[in-house]
Structures are given as C-alpha cells and as structure tokens.
Length: 522
Ligand code: FAD
Ligand code: SIN
Image (cartoon, rainbow, N blue to C red; front, side):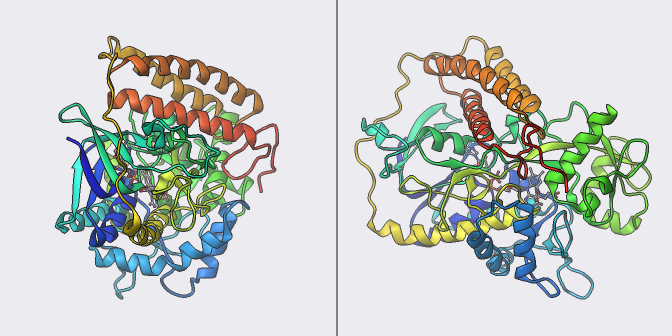
C-alpha cells in the first residue's frame, strides 16, 4: 500500500504528538511509529518539565541556569525563545489533558533538579512522561484528521536521490518527499509521500551498553537524515544521567530521578562518605556533566562498581508521595529507600546534538522539520539542563507546525519516486552477526567514547567502528530489511558521527571531557 498525506510525522513521543495536534487543523496527518504507539523516551520521563510559573522564579533565572549548564555553547536567542514560551506551552499541555501535581494551596508543586537555581519543575508524581504521553495520545485519538500507524518502521527518507539526481551535503536544495516504511504487520515496504515531514524519532541511548532509554532509542532519525546528506551537529555531547539504579542484568537501566536529589538525596561512596563537595559547590545538585564525571572518577579511584544515593534522612511520607514508582521499583529488588542506600551508576541518557534546525524547526533539507530529542536547536549547548527537553519538544513542535501550516499551501506531492527495490536480498542466515555487531558497537562506545575520552581512545573507536561499518553495509545490501538490521545500521552511523564530532572538538567542554585537553573541575 502506498499512501499520500499532507503531514508525515515519524515518531509518537511528545514532539510528534504535540505537532500532530497543531497540524491536523490544516491537513491530513499520518503519524508512523515503530513499536506500540506509546513506546518512547517520553513515556519514561520522570522528573518533569521545566517552566517559569511563579515568582521568585523568573525567565532571566531560568535562562541563566540553561546557559551555565550549556557551558558557553547555547544559542542565547534560542534559550530566550524557548524559556519565554514555557508557561504558554505548559498551559496548552494542561488544556490537552496533562495533569501536574499541586500543593494543598492549589499552586503547582514545583520540584528542583541539578543546575536549577529555583524550584521550577512541573511533575506528575515521578512518572510525568507517562502522564503527558497518555494525555496527548488521548487527544490525538479524538482527532479525525490524524491517523496513527503503529508498528511501522521508517527506513529512509525520500529525496532527489530517489529520482536518480545526485545529492550531496553542499547542495542547498535537497528536498524531502516522504519515506520508505516497513509495515511490520505485513513485512512489506511501503512508500509514504508527504508535503511536509516532521522527524520526531527521539534519542539514541542504545549506542551505549548502559542506558536509561528504552529499546526504541536507536538514533534512526539522525542516521536517516545523515544518509540523506542533512546537517547534524553537537553529537559529541551525549549526556550521561548520574543516577541510574545499579541492578546488573537489567536493561534498560531504571532511572532514579534527579528530583530525588532535588528533594535532598545525597551521593556517597560505598563507605558512606559524601564526595560531591570535592567537585562542585552545588554538591549533589551540580549540573549533570559534573556529577556524572565525579561519580565516574570516584568509582575509578576506589575500584567500586557504583556509588550510593542516601535518602534515609528524608521525610518518609513525603518521599513516598513524591516518588511512589521509584520507591516500589527499589522495593522490588530488595531496597527500601527509607532505610537502605540506593546503589547508582551513570547511564547514557540524552542526545544533546542531532539534526540541526533553525528557530522554526527547519532542517537543512527542504520540507523536512525536526523536533524533540532527535533535533539540535541550540538550547542545550554542551550540556542539557535537567527537564529542559520536554519543554524544548513542545516549543519546537509549536513553531515547526506554524511554519509548516504556511508552507504547505504552496507544496505538491513529488512524482516519480520508485517503489522500494528488494531485488537480490534474502533473509539473514545468521542473526548472531547482527547481535554480535550490536554488542561490539556498544562496547566500543562505552569503553572509548563514554564520560571520559582521549585522543587515543577515540582513534581506537574510529578504527574498530570502521570494520563494523564495512561489514554491516555489505550485509545490508544482500539482506531482507528488518528493524534489527536497520537499527544496527543506524546505531553504527550515530556512533560514527559521535566519534567524528568528538575528534573535531579539541577541548573539554560540557559533556565532552577529554584527558588530552583537560579542564579543571570547577
Ligand atoms: P521520544 O519520546 O523518544 O519518541 C520517539 C518516537 O519515535 C517513538 O515513538 C519511537 O518509537 C519513534 N521512532 C523512532 N525511530 C523510528 C523509526 N525508524 N520509525 C518509526 N518510528 C520511530 N526529559 C525531561 O525534560 N524531563 C524528564 O523528567 C525526563 N526524564 C527522562 C527519564 C528517562 C528514563 C528518559 C529515557 C528520558 C527522560 N527525559 C526527560 C528526556 C525526554 O523524555 C526525551 O528527551 C523526550 O521525551 C523525547 O521526546 P521525543 O518526542 O523527541 O522522542
Ligand atoms: C530525571 O528525572 O532525573 C530526568 C530529568 C531529565 O532527564 O531531564
């Protein structure tokens, strides 16, 4: 089945859903998503969404906190734009049905996280993302102009390349016309043509061995746009969350929200000593790059596999009220956070770089927009401030939709795109080839391109990845398309871009820390 739609959205997390609700008044929207419709990073977001709601907080304070976390690389105009939009976009989310916790006097119960100078995180207990995803999906289901196709896997976006015209990254006029999509129910590859395309495919945490991201986070959007010769930036800034639950064998890693530290949780080494004062005056609530690096350093010096988060001194009823899911999760593995230390380790968490977009969410490829974690807007710079990503996703979905609604009036469908050609391919004889290559990519990235890097490690990573790249491209050409094959290919592409960008950055900044260009921990 081939299809035509006004707006094609790839991904059903907060970015894709928010965009769909705006675009649908102006044309037919088709949203495709590769797993169950709610499966996304969004669904697992815990801490909440940052916004300036009341004094003593102010836009200026939130702007400054964002700029400080970004370590000099944020686009200041973008930071101002996103933060001054925050209250409006939050109110829209509330109108769309999302519920945020309130205090007894009816004000929003604002939490605090690392790098924030004020309490400004709106949340729904400790499962804010689940609540947002629920509300937006319900609103989308109500809309007659939006169709969601779940278990539809985007393989590649369509450009002039598919019309036989040469495309390269120096050409300013590349255009996107839709995508080739694998229908996972029929195993057939379909062509979806669209006038406007939004990439909302989320992050790529699975490029590392340990991540808080669900299995869908394989960097597909970044890899597709990279292959289509679109601009990608900032990929050296992969954020490791300081505190994922240390529970060997569990994948993905369960997150222990930064809001727990905002609530008073204290990091300690396993002999019960506080250590963050050695690294930053803000201690356990310093920005994530600093805390993750400090934990990594303590673990390496001491030879420990984890550090502890101590919550035993906190108000027990309030702790359970604010973090019921974290409390239950810990209990399920025999840890009572009211009485026991919680063992934690850093885990890959958020892709700060991605598809380069302007203030309207436009990528370097015509008709193609990007929003949410797959995009690079300039908001995060070298390190994202906690809970700024859900905010960024709704703000950019808004501006991208406004621009697309105007543009679509002058656009037509592309003619002449051929159907997918599967000639000469066969089902893989040995799945072990894919599984082993995936493990190798993750090991290379974890050991050589993790929290602390060096020129030598990056060189090694590059050399080893090249072998995997060549092997996998050869396999790709002769193998029947499957999500596992495509995801591996995408992760190899993403790993390559992270290494390339890391090698180009001859300094330690934000999340990119290299021993060859050290920066004193402040
Ligand atoms: P996602 O929500 O990840 O959605 C991506 C969608 O694209 C999914 O539906 C996926 O299936 C689909 N997709 C991907 N590839 C394809 C393909 N090839 N074909 C079809 N569909 C595809 N941020 C905050 O601001 N506050 C928080 O408290 C917070 N907590 C977090 C906790 C955890 C455990 C995690 C993992 C992240 C957290 N984040 C938080 C980050 C935040 O959740 C994400 O950055 C944000 O939800 C990303 O939204 P998105 O719409 O861009 O992508
Ligand atoms: C958390 O709850 O710690 C996650 C917040 C975020 O990633 O922004």
